[in-house]
Image 1 (tube, helix red, strand yellow):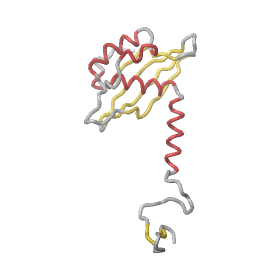
Image 2 (cartoon, one colour):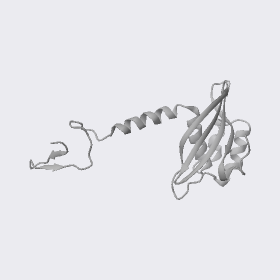
Image 3 (cartoon, one colour):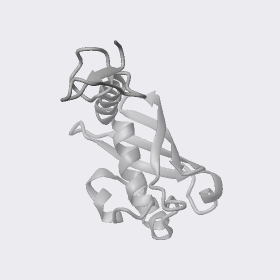
Image 4 (cartoon, one colour):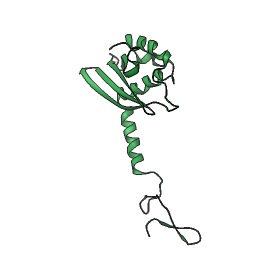
Length: 156
């Protein structure tokens, strides 16, 4: 009988809320495997990687100098101006996360990206520019915040 399991006494007991197929012994659900694959693919894309790092700095979770080797030109100066106020600080003790991140390639070796940052019910916007150097490493050259943070942020 589906949904019934024999205990040590041989009595059947139901398992409400379980949807594991018969014969499946692991506890993972199929969706967890798909989510892990998405997370791996996301980490391999430079604009997602930078969005996560920029969020860590702008939410006060990491110091600005954590981005020293990953920024060039005005990008680092913009972070220095923005970070002290931690404009993406968690709202209501909910850690902010990158909900989505998009990209546009205006030319070779350049990515202009945007990210939606979620923290509880609050959603903020962040835009940044990545440039690929002669060493083939991506570096952030500009950062801009939208919404209530737009006045404090320099324009791209």
